[in-house]
Each structure stands twice: as structure tokens, then as C-alpha cells.
Length: 334
View 1: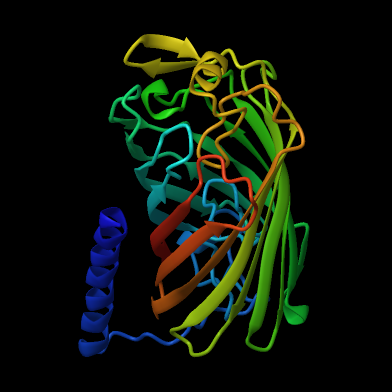
View 2: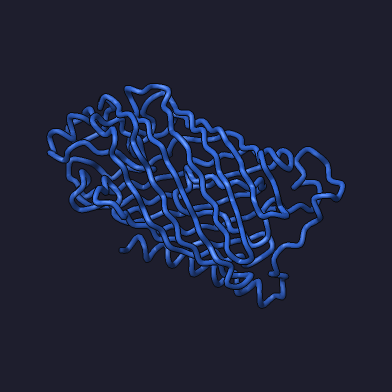
């Protein structure tokens, strides 16, 4: 709970910052951008003219941030602070992980964007005596997305993407396993008046199927724009494992580096995976699934600044290493 309160304090500070903006009279109305028909340079349009890559009223997702890639072609910096609580009955016997991550998106054209959606610093604090408190960097993930259908007048967009996740993260925080992975996905958004829905579905396909598991992920966010500055949302995020690994990845313990399969066997936890946090390449997880529900709100406090707050909890009996998670986001878009 201390971690949740810590993130809450940070979020409160940003809310105070928003109040200062209001007091100074800085415009906070929804952005007014040039029409799509207005002449605008083809390359890197957000740096060269006024453009609205996001449809009016739509807000970005803030849950499952590594994999949930929205369909809009935007330019900005997206900062997420996560507090992830481990179940007491899990392999970690409780504890938590605290993550600070920054994402970058750049509109190369009005339909093509470069995205870097995974990096960050992790403070890993399991309660299990066999594992030490550690910290380090996660893997990187980057790629491109292209708006195949962009019907602004009908409030519908469809965007496939392809990303690559490296294996350069620190094993001390359960990253850096395998030889990387490809993540093809497709996202869509549709709106009607003040109601909006965005979602995606994709696959994380590791280069080395022995070292990491393969899974399908899906995300759906439904929001309603109550005011220009307040959009509450509900969401569903899911992972289905379609192929398991061989359990050979090493975990650093107080007894030395041991294969994940050995650790799971010694502790009697059964086979489990790491959801969207990590990929352990565990045996016998084919067919396992994890469904997480989320609730939260986005606060567009300024033309270029949006704050977000979300809470997630598993809806399935299977939880693996997911008890609950709180996320606070600060989003700066051109």
C-alpha cells in the first residue's frame, strides 16, 4: 500500500501543477488543429505545422503500457509510473515492483509513426528470502505503425504495427532472457459523440522459443468524455499463452543462478508466467490465460498535456504474479 500511496502523492503533485496552469490562464480547451486538407509538409508534420493526429475526445491508454499500442499517429513523450503488487501465494510470496518508464512516439508522416514503447527502470522487491531486492533496466521495444484506414469523419481508424523487443534488460529484474521477440499487432478506434473505444490484438513471438513463451495479447478501453478535462474509462487486458518455453532461463537467487524450472519445482508453485511484466520461458503454460480488469480516468489539463490514473486487478482465478497494479501517467503530445 505504501507504493500506491507514493504514486498517489506524485499524481497529486501533477494535479496541483494543472491547477497552476488554470490559475495562470493558460488555455486548457481541447486542441484546435488545422484541417486534414490544409497544406502540411509530408515528413514529420507535427514538428512543422499544426496537426491533430488524435481524434477530438479520444484519450490514450495507460494500462498494459508496454503492449497496448493505440491506433493514432501522434508525436510525444509518455511517462508511466507503475506500482505492481505480487500475490502472497505467488512464487515471490508477496512484495512489489516499482517501474518508471518513458515512451516516445514520432509521426514520420500523417499515417506512419515510429514508436519506442518499452524501456524503464525497475525496483524489484520480492518478499521471498531466496530472492534479493534488485533494480535495473528492462528490455527495449521499438518499431513502426501505419494507419491503414483513417476515416476521421466517421470516427474510425485501423492501424497495424510491428515492433521488436530486445533482450538487453537486466536478469536481476527478470529481463534480458532469450534473443528478442517480434510483436505484430493491429489496433482500432471508433467513436460516437462522447463515447469512445480503442483496442488492439497482437502476438509476442520470441526469436528463441526455447528461452521464452509465446502469447497472444488483447486490450480494450472504453471511455466517456464527461467534460473536456475528464474522461473516465473501463478496460480489459488479456494474455493467452499459445506455446511454452523449456524453463532454462536462469534466475538469480541467494543460492546462485538457477533455471526457472528448478526454482518453480523447488518452491512447489507450479508452472507460471510473468504476464506483461516479464517472460520466463516456463514449461507447461500452453493454454494458460490471464485477464485483468481496469478502471481509471484521463485528465486533458492542457492542449498538450494529459494526466492519467488507472487501477488494475485480475478477473481470472489464475493470477501468476499479478495481484494488483496502479499506474500514474503524464503525457506530452505536440
